[in-house]
Length: 263
Image (tube, rainbow, N blue to C red):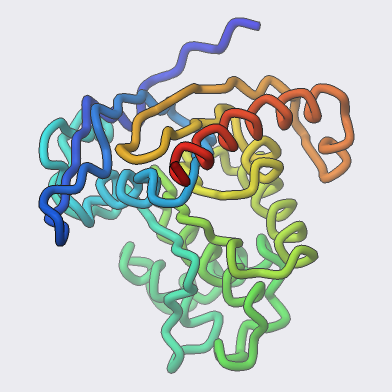
């Protein structure tokens, strides 16, 4: 199936990244290039230490590449910016603010104030089904609920690109499944450009337009797998023959890289 031509939102251009290690230079990324289209949902899988988070942090502007560059909307990324939002595995909520005020913080950074900010915050909390917990504090929430607040706040900031580094990795299987469904439903409505790192192959396929398979260190793009399964997708999508065939292929490729790390 021919993929619809869309404007490039993020361009990763021959990115190379090395760090100083105890035994000299350690190459984390070696010549990574990728065009991410506007409104596309990209997921990234690969063995631990293959540079997935390093790449995300370079796109976010939290790290600088040793060579190469990343462009967002045609502009070279030089530090963080409001056009890119990040959701990490740890929730990074303000513990002294209520759920509503955590989301309002992102709105106020956009210049939305007062009653308008309160109303808009509730809309984002409804999006993640947490409107009944608007006046609770983070310490009163479960891990999954905290992560939903973090996602609502990220959406409230209206970034053009949402970067997520294993946001469901610390959650139990049932909560993870619930948040996959909510994130998928939200993306199907909002169609924001997403870059999502995960170790869960099923999760990667369910969410993505394309799955990026990274090689063992030094990190390179080993393969890009188009996911042409139609939307809307649900958890039942995982039971289809098409899904199972894609899963088997991606898992085999990832497992090869896992074995390479152990050698």
